[in-house]
Length: 477
Ligand code: BG6
Image 1: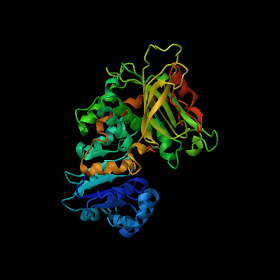
Image 2: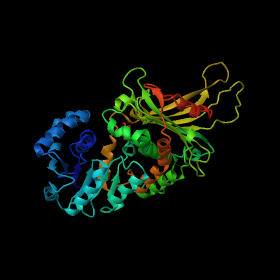
Image 3: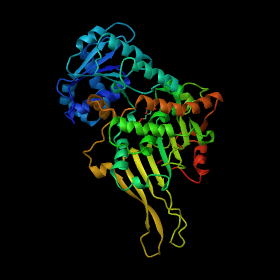
């Protein structure tokens, strides 16, 4: 779908996110012919440099992070011509009138706040003071959107002083992932699944986001957040919403977000015995979490597993098991819907509990498989085996369908003015309202996370969380 001509101003335009995600994503859209002629990216940051310096820097960054398409140097040269730079002081007056002069009438104005939330208020205010933002302008903000309910409310209030909710695009990049959007297609585009998608047929649901990476160079941020704030409050919560929500009456921003909000508000407070926190130890090698964040006394969690319940008619009694962690055995994000067994087997001697499982692989190896029970081929009688009906997107759709990066999609949605894949303020607040009591309880009792060895599936207690219920986690490969 074509978009209108735009000026995208990126505050923090020299930062990591701009270099790794925003600019490489825009370049791919440019190459796909989706960036209308005359559209511009205006980077605003503190350091002094000119357009030529900025273009050179970004050219290198796009080559580093942009994938195979950056071999097309002719396109890359053409793309960087649309980049501009202006030095701006977010907290002072410097650079604002230059930025104001650069803006043009008659094109869409979008402002990407790729900076810490501490600057949101300053930026919003100055954009107005200098009449740079207009009634149609969009602003884009990133996580962390607060660190608890109170700070999220304060941020929402700050932004609301200058922008309407329909101008604010809060990114959760999981919503931009192709496979996450596919969740809605699978659920609401097939006759097969929806009738079974409830407590009559579903035994439980598992959501796993396991990473092999550690905290990398982000120790300072991460140690103050932990897995609960960094992953569960946002990414896992969004996955839970998409898998559990009622069908919106149409695929439209507020219709979808209303349904997600209902799920979050229906989440029951988590029983303390149903949560496991973990922190990685060297295991087979590599530094411990505490060495990584250079805080020998850190009690921050790099792993969380929990059992949640949604108090509504569809999901009454169905547990949702969530887990996420760093430095785990493999990189796997998947959602598994485990159906109930059939209850009575007509096949003599068959004592296994056969269960249909729909596993949706979000990354890597994007696709889904449905575990079904069949007769083991051969003359040995009616023996049953469970086999996967496997569909890997790359095979099914062909290799030319390269999976686009989440940011590509999301940035274009901002320009289109489509908020469906962005979080509304009330959603973010509701999510904090659910995670806050858990985090507060940990803090109040100075909870020490369970240790787990790197390269494993997390602490033993996380296994027990399921075993106690006569269930088990799917293997992380
Ligand atoms: C980010 C978290 O939001 O998501 C990181 O801050 C995490 O800690 C990352 O590594 C995971 O994203 P992805 O797209 O690699 O699954």
